[in-house]
Amino acid sequence: MTVRRFSPETVSGPPVLLVHGFASDGHTDWITTGWPAALTAAGREVLVPDLPGHGSSPATGGSQGAKAITAELSRLVSSLSEVDVVGYSLGARLAWELPAQAPVRRLVLAGVSPFEPFGAVDVVAAMAFAEGGKTPADPLTAMIAHMITAPGRNPAALARCIEDLRQEPFAPVAGAVTVPTLFVAGVDDPVSQGIETLAGLVPGAGLVRVPGDHGGALRSPEFKAAVLEFLG
Image (spheres, rainbow, N blue to C red):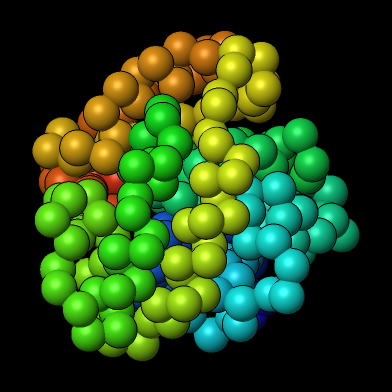
């Protein structure tokens, strides 16, 4: 798993792990939006991985389901005494699992659905589109098909990731996360509808709504400000 590291001049707190969303990568979600710069200015080392099959990380030979990916993320931070984690979309769904496996101090889960997001995707139709076929009739599948065929993406690896992820459906339960947690959702983001039910499963969790849809919320200055305040 490819990891980019950014170091501050003076350290003021534990490192921060930034986990990107599906069919994206660490550079697109975090670096181009200024997150490492903001966090290193606040005295934090920053770790920005590309998930398997995403960005510059190759697909693994084994499973690319949630358990396998979170195990890789856990190994990435296993040498640290503590780490703060910020996950967006799929990254947040994966980050939900991390406090049980890694020394997570504080957790930010943003743009996350309380339901399994890939259960209704027609992977066969999405791959047919990737191979030059018609746009799928189902709107969700069509959206996913366009995501996995965006420039620089690996459609076959991403389709396999979907298959593996839905073999382990997201089924959040109360008590699974006990570290201080902040949930963040865009006010116009359909993906994170119902995020308040997730927040209700975590004792003392906060919930902040910021401007924007799924992509816009990630890039909103309000999101960054809320996270910096929470982690600080």
